[in-house]
Every structure is written in C-alpha cells, then in structure tokens.
Image (cartoon, rainbow, N blue to C red; front, top):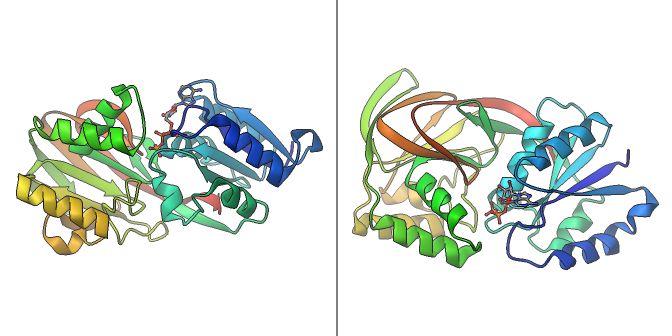
Length: 291
Ligand SMILES: Nc1ncnc2c1ncn2[C@@H]1O[C@H](COP(=O)(O)OP(=O)(O)OP(=O)(O)O)[C@@H](O)[C@H]1O
C-alpha cells in the first residue's frame, strides 16, 4: 500500500474536478509511481469505507479531498486505526476544519505541504454516537444544513440565501440541558458544540475553541431577533461573538439535551435528522492529523 491515499469527493465544493487532478500529478507525480493511491468517492458514506480500508492496509496518511462532509467521513473511517493520520486538501464550500488547522486553501500549496506534513492529535466530538470533528449543533444551524443539502447548488451564495430564507420562519424550541452538574431550562434557537472554532468560511461560532483541550465550547442562543441576528453575524465574521453578548458560552466534556418537540441536528454541516434526546460527548485526542 502506498504511504498516502487521496480520497477525492468529486461533488464537493464548486471547483472543477480537473484542477485537483492536474495539481496532484504536478506535486506527487503519476499514480503509477506507487507513491500514492487516488480513490474517488461514489456516494455518501463511501469515504468512510475507503479510509478504513486504506488504514487497515497500512497507509500512513489518508487525505480527505473535499469539504467538512468528506473530512467527517474520512475521520470516521480513521478513528481507532492507530498509525494512520488524516490530511486535508480543502476543496469544499466552507472548509471549517481545514481553516482552523491553517491548511492552505490554495490546492497546490495544500498538496505541497502534504509531502512533508507535521503530525499532531485532535479531540473528536460525538453527537448521539456520531463523531464530529469541527462543529455539531441543534436548532437553526441544523435547519440551514438540511435546506442547504436540498438547494441543488453549493457555495457561499447558496448558503447565505438559505440562511436568510430559513430565518423568516424558524421558531426556537424549549429544551432542558444537563451539563457540568447543572440543569438549564431554556429555549434553543442555536445550541452549538464546537470542537474547532468555525462553521467554515471564517464564520467563527466559537473563536476560542481548541482542538486539543479535551473540551467542547458550548454556545447557546435562546432567541435571535433581527437586531441580535445582526450582532451575531458581525460577531461571527469578526471572531468577536463571545464578547458581543449575543450568545452564552461554557465548556463541556458531555451534555444531555431534551427538547419539548423534535428539533434538527447536524454534525459537521451534514443534517442528521430530528430528535428530542441528544447525548453529546468527547473523545480526547482520538484522531491523528497530518497538516
Ligand atoms: N460521489 C459522490 N456523489 C454524491 N455525493 C457524494 C459523493 N461523494 C461524497 N458525497 C457527499 O457529498 C457531501 C458534500 O461533501 P463536502 O461536505 O465534502 O463538500 P461541501 O459541502 O461542498 O463542503 P463543506 O462541507 O466544507 O461546506 C458529503 O456529505 C458526502 O457524503
């Protein structure tokens, strides 16, 4: 098995497929050299299977070529596979984890870095047992993920259009949150659990989040009237949200959330469905990364 395996989601992001393949050949030569193997994904979930197979075959670095959805699938396949690290070539729409890890957004530069990467470990969050690497959440951000997946096109402009559209009708849901020995009765407009600092596109939901602190940054917005929505959007763009007063923060290793009515949830921007009970947890330093 070659040292490096590229798992390539051809549908991620808005870029052209040819760009990545040309740059890969420029940086790593031809696949026939045996230095790497290229595995295109054939549909949702396939990247997890490909990553696990590559790790079990002894591959040192498995690279997710795509956005946070591809990173999530590759990361899931690499959990509990000692000796294999995850690399990222950011080719998605938001690229939240890649941006947090300061992976170059230029594909050629990201590939060049992977020739001699630095290795480290990062925490992994779980939502009802499903791993997440960047952020997970309940409420409005999950609604946006759900509608974005149905929008028929990707990219920042589609994301912004869907966000504004869903803002017109979204209603918060009463929830009970148990964490850090406390019970909180509140409304949930957004309840985000951030392992990394941003959703993607430099939208910082938790600018102080640290991938190695053994904690998730929990961010609660109980309501989002228009004046506060402006405050939150600006705070996320500038990385100042914790100081604006638009959201309440705490750190947690685990939390239980019970909702009065079914509420949507997402992991790394992929809508997972609606439920009334949620268990949030953390696997400290469970994944090795190569960046
Ligand atoms: N061959 C394929 N055909 C259709 N969908 C695929 C294929 N391979 C992977 N997928 C799905 O594509 C989805 C979107 O991929 P990804 O999240 O990487 O890109 P993105 O949404 O453009 O980027 P970001 O999450 O950073 O905004 C993933 O959830 C994955 O399951």
